[in-house]
Image: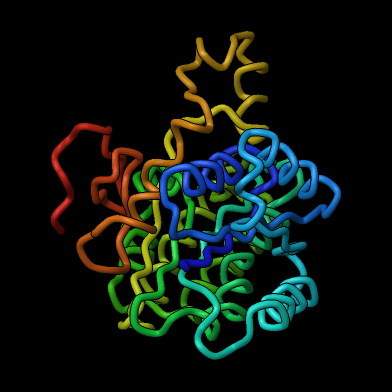
Length: 291
């Protein structure tokens, strides 16, 4: 049985990923991670309404990726339920995220970048050491942010040898620029782009540090979720008019990286399951990135 933890799985892309795996891969057992246990239970019930037999392959895990205590408690719960030997988990999907830059850069980074690191720090010891996988759900906003950044920033966040210390220092510098409100601070959706570019870089670092695991990042595509819906509203359009797809259409890359045969580790994949560059946008259907 391949047990998979998915954070932020009570709605949107996370919930759609759980449903896809349950419906298409009988060997999977899903740990539905949710910050709010009540909403998580409602999501779990909605899945059982679709297929009651899934109850034997599904469990709820309360986990707030912004809080060390919550993440560590969730890891302890997994050990209590499934033991530590043999390794209880096959994979981790860091899907939880926010996009509202009105909350400030620090809040966005704490969820979107430090969140995956907290989860990996706590759960990597529980992964199967020979076949374990990690999928960090990021966004094309990361490459788009880097495309407009300085050469120094591009070099740092695409460096195959990047360290977590360097990533953390870069985030600290961004926070300083934000607090000073200098012209170097992009504002608006820059917070989101910065967080996703840093998480892509973290994926490189994590893969280098754990060569026996398969660790990659991906974008789900332009998907209608609570995160993107305000963009349509602010433009006076429907999500469909903005070109957004359904959450069910946003799971392909994550599922491929979990259950397919990606080439290598420490890479970033487009929504079409094809390797993509970290510092510029690659449209679905374009040739694979080979750098």
